[in-house]
Image 1: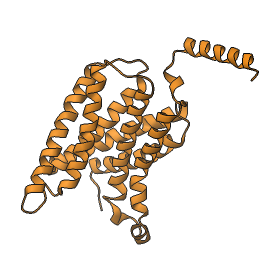
Image 2 (image 1 turned 180 degrees about the vertical axis):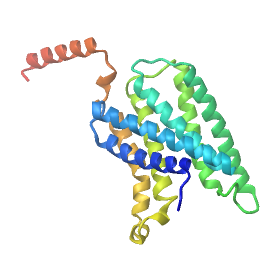
Image 3 (image 1 turned 90 degrees about the vertical axis):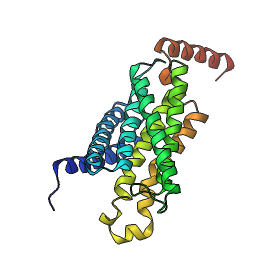
Length: 245
């Protein structure tokens, strides 16, 4: 079977995205290797989303167009959140808000049309996928509005923004391989439910990391200026010596 160049690019982007995403998740956060794996993941997922959107436009598949654009939005905004060390915003953030707001409205509208149609479908999809992605897009849009009103975010909020968007994009990439292409895998994997586990594994990791950054102090030092960290460490050392520890 001969594959078109754009389809081959799409497959390579998805495969490399899932592999690099898996590597990035298990590497120490803020390390050079984590950043490298994350960069590969971002590029791969942009290729996946961009090529998927292009093919969906050619085939007139609105659901896949929305999914491809949303994937690119998640990856791009997550990458920007990771790169910014200070609470600032710019034109990129306003453009991202416009895009995700449009996606939210269209997804929810298509979900309503599917729910009220005689066949219970719209462009080949039932209401569930439209409402699911539309709800996530609404959460993302709400986060964008809050960030813009505050003129930026920092600390654990910035890390959480980076983390959940990357993980959800990772989930989209995993589901597009293990669920949408389940027929490509051996029968025992389909029967055992392992394909579902592999697909939803990024969401489980997302929940784990969000809980960890919410209830621990592991990631807060990364947003603290170096001289502040040094003074804090010196003060902590003096306190420890004074208390006998």
